[in-house]
Length: 116
Image (cartoon, rainbow, N blue to C red; front, top):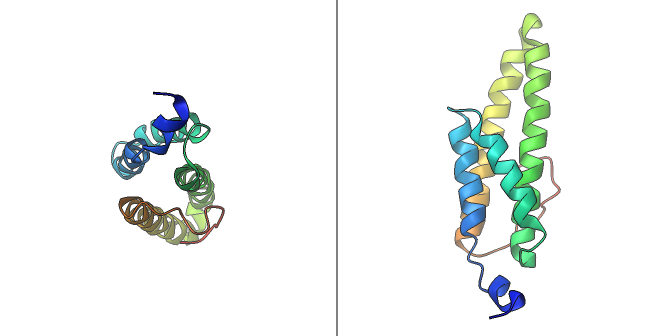
């Protein structure tokens, strides 16, 4: 079987693993880095509908990382706690939204969005 035929039958199991690693990273931490590396690796060979998921995952990691840094820097003025709480909720919602679309085999509608 050639590569094109194999890619067209990709069910998104690797993308699902990335979402799960992201959610586990809320407790363990390092699994988020593993997830973003996986998203970068699998993105180039994925079918178009899955590429949108990998792009969503990469952006979720980096934007979440940015929010976490801002939250940590602003902890001393107490607004950081709100930023970190928002980041946690934002991260979880994006992962659940991605998993939901993945289960339906749908692309992410706006993979470059900063919002939910």
